[in-house]
Amino acid sequence: MTDRVHPVDEVLPTPKLFALGLQHVLVMYAGAIAVPLIIGRALGMSPEQVALLISADLFACGVVTLIQSFGMPGVGIRLPVMMGVTFASVAPMLAIGRDPSLGITGIFGAIIASGLFALLVAPFISRMLRFFPPVVTGTIILVIGVSLMRVGIGWAAGGPSFINQMIDGKLRIIDNPNPGYGALDSLGLALFVLCVVLALTKYGKGFVQNIAVLLGIIVGCAAAYAIGKMNFDVVGRAHWFGFIYPFQFGLPKFEPISIITMCLVMIVVMIESTGMFLAIGDMTGRKISQDDLTKGLRADGLGTMIGGLFNTFPYTSFSQNVGLVGVTGVRSRFVTAAGGLILLAMGLVPKFGALAEAIPSAVLGGAGIVMFGMVAATGVRILTAVDFRTNRNNLYIVAVSVGLGMIPLVAPNFFRNMPHSLHPLLESGILLAAISAVVLNMYFNGFKSAAEAEAEVRSGAALADAAH
Image 1 (cartoon, helix red, strand yellow):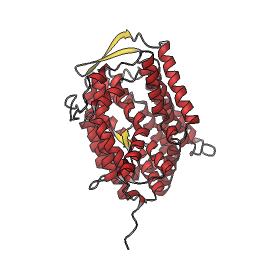
Image 2 (cartoon, rainbow, N blue to C red):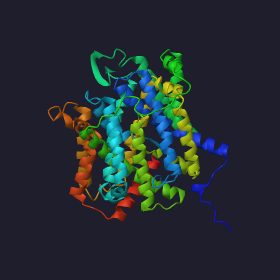
Image 3 (cartoon, rainbow, N blue to C red):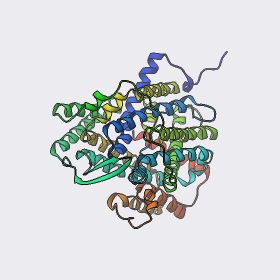
Image 4 (cartoon, rainbow, N blue to C red):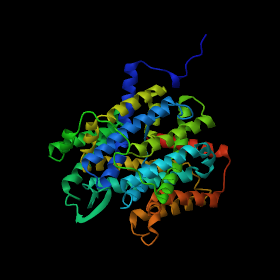
C-alpha cells in the first residue's frame, strides 16, 4: 500500500489547476503592478518604459513563483506561495533612482547585490528572529503603509505636483507644476473608485471580495474611458509578443551606500517572509524545518537577483495569497505553480504591460488609498499582539520609530547637509524606522529565546494574513 500524497504535493486536473492558478493571479495582480507603476512614474519614465517595467515584473513574478513552488536543489520552500515585488523596497529605490548619478540602473545594481547578499545570509536569518518581535515588525509595516500613502494620494490628485522627466537615464525635475494636479475630475474619479472598492468589500462575497481592489480599478477604467480620460495609444503600439531580456535599461551601477541600503531592506523582507512561511506551513499541515526556511529565503534572494537582472525589483511572498490558501482550503503547490506560469506568459505579452500603464493616475489613486492603507492597517493589527499595558517601554519603541520614519515624508530636506552618499539610506523612512525599532527593542527588552521569537513571528504572520 502506497503512502497517501500530502495535499501540498497533490497534482490537480489541468482545468482546475488553471482556474485556481488564475484566481491567485487576480488576487495579487493589483499589488504586483503597483511597484513598477510607482517607480516608473515617480522617475519620469516614458509610458513605453513603464510598460516594460510592468512586463518585466510579471515575467519575473512568474519565474520566482515557479522556483518557490516547484523548488530546485537548495532553493525553494515547495509550498503554495506566490511571489511579488515587496512594497518595503519602494522608498529606498526612489531615493536611489532620484540620485542623478545613479538613476534606474543604480536601483538594479543595488538589487542584484542585495539578492546575492540574501542568498549568502539565508541560513542565518532564522537566528535573527529574536531581533524582530511583533513590536518591531508591526512598526516597520505601519511605516511602510504610511509612507506609501503619499504615492496613493498623489495619484488621486492626478499625478505628481511637479513634472519629472528621465533624460539619458537621469532624473530631471522640471520646475513647472503639473497643470492637472488636484483637478476636480481626477478627485471625483478617485473617490468613485474608492467607493466601488468599499461597496464590493462590504457586499461582495468570497472571491469577489478578495479581488475588490482589482475590480475597482476595472470599473474605474471604464468610467475614465467614458469621460475621455483613458488613452490606449500605448496599448495600440505595443506588440502581442516580446522577450524580456537582461539589462534593457543599460548595465547596472554598483554604489556601496545604495547596496547597503537595499541589503537592510532585504533583511526586513526575509524576516517578513519567514513569518509567512511559518504561517503557511501551519495552514497546509506541513512542518517547516530550519532547512526549509533556508531554502525559502534563498528563493527570495535568487528571485531578487533575477529581478535586478531582468529590469525589475526585489521579491517576497505575497501575504494576500497566503490568506487565499486559507480561504479556499486548496493546499497544492502546483496551483501556485500554475499561477506562476500564467504570470510568466502575461509578461511575454507587452500589451498587458501597456494596458496596466494606461490606467489613469486617479483610478490608481482610489485603489492605492485602500491598498497602501491596508499595509498600514496590517502593521497596526500586528501591534495588537504587543504588550503595551504592562510594558510601557514598547510604547516608546513605536513612538520614536514612527517619528523617525516620518522624517523623509514630512521634511524632505531634513538631511540636506549630510554627506550625499548617505542620502539613499537617510531618505528612506522605512529604513530609519527599522533601525530605530531594532535598536530600541534591544535597549528596552533585550533578547528572547529562539523558540519564543519563532512563536511571536508566527503569531504576527497569522495576524497579517487575517488582515487580508
